[in-house]
Length: 387
Image: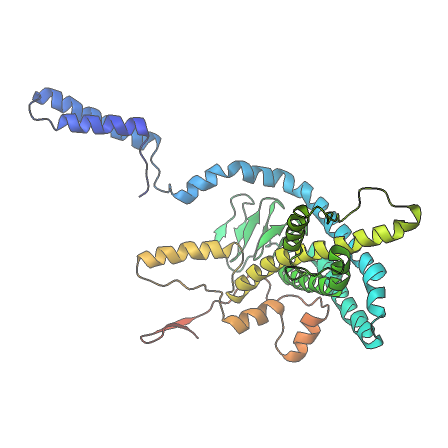
């Protein structure tokens, strides 16, 4: 049981209890003090005590204004984020065609063919999975005839199947809900979880590819022909090193990435070419780092058969079972290999090529209403083993 005394009531309670223990006071005075202590205790339990109070409940109450803000404004920020993704992706692709691809074409014909095939394969997958993630419905439970019910949604007042959660932004329950993604302006659930994850994978591969192709041009435009103290990929460290080195040597004026003075009219094309190369590499490098961390987090969850919501639920269950000297296992963890096969929807190498490496609209396994549960067997020497 979790409870906390209010400071003033705690002080009064302690003082009454201590004074009531003094033996030389009259019995009537001690009885009244003991009665006052009991009254303060009762008052505390009436006003402040809650059996379900915990640190997580307190944090949830403190974050309630943030939840309110997300509920009220996230649906309006969604179209802004989608527009931002479209604009940035279009700019990166345009600069690649205008600036980077002609530079690649001057190397050799085989490399040019490779870049055309590989680059367009990535582009098609990125566009396809993003559009499917945005416009595909994540899946909602039917109002009636739900085959398996684990609870009732307090907001929808409707039955909830396993792994179903209510999205306050969309205002409805989502089958196997992972999270509400503002970059998709849509919930990530049973029907579009695969599209979301593959979009992250292909976009991450695309940013690495563009950074690799534009690395030489970026190095020329950012550092010139001078040697760098760090590898060119760590351009912020080289910029700081260059600024300190040149500031200590008056004979070498500091270089500026973008010249604040307007260039002559005949150099406008070269000037904007310079800006485009820098913008392309810096943007793709930053997205590679941020998107890579997000992709690794979701890959870890998929490997364990969890969603972003279920990982917190399972951690709470593990702590409860641990207090009872028991081990909690995720009932939807079928093992590493099967988790990925169920998530991506392939069963062989051929289906992997058709359904993962190429754009595919195949539906996920199951209807999202009924989920098979993994079974375990306890062995003395190995503990719980997945059957």
